[in-house]
Length: 397
Image (spheres, rainbow, N blue to C red):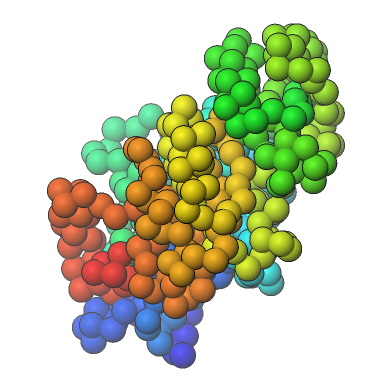
């Protein structure tokens, strides 16, 4: 494998322009922790972007941070924690899930993949915190978009386009994100023993209450370590407010059973485990095919019941039931046909599978013809020769 590691932006431009002239695709790599996401690339040329690392600007009072795209996520989070701030979209650490231990998650990587954790239901996705960037397109041209303020009028919102593009449109060199204060306290109201439909009603009631939840999830009994189903509602904020809201929420959910309230440490451990899908990173699920399925929360029970007739799987619910994590065993196609046929409205993304399966199976939800045509036009604009991460999202792109 040929590895290119440009020392600066000028060398990056030259490398991409050389690949463009030769029409030889490049695999973009920041820290390497997400190489298992998407379709496997068939190129001997790797473009390492680790040089573009380090915090460039951090203004805690303005709630904004600018850093090299390859800056380790741990460095970003440590810097923010020192100022009692955080990345509110709560990006997960999927290294154990994907088997990429020893690699380094980066800020640019989570933005390029638009990865968001349990707090998404309140704070939005990664793309909603992505304010600006600099990068080099597949045309070998330097460009930038956005800025350092939440509201800016600079034309098209290219940050939204880059988020979730998996490096197929540009090699990001610098990114700017919105940050938010860390909550002083966290409490988790925990109900035990609920079935899926009842759990969804409890989560819906909690989310529609005045208590401003920062997470709502449900673990069936065969997934929860306690051996009984757990339904969780997270409350965050100043200590007096959190304690009062958690106590009030427990009373409001009394019709679903006696609830327990977990403190800061227990809550953090539990929600980080959900964020990282840790249950599917170890036996008995380590060798299963893993999917993330996004649906309307009200349709989750029917979707799960339909799948039970066709697949052997384990699962848990996040985002109030709007996100279903599945670990499928024994299906030749990883469960793709059954899963996508059962989705009433939404999309399914293949997260973990052997390379051979990811090479032949649509990893991302197949696009409608009109959307696929638009995707082609966008790709033509930024990377007409398909130089950057060719085939990472769709075989033809």
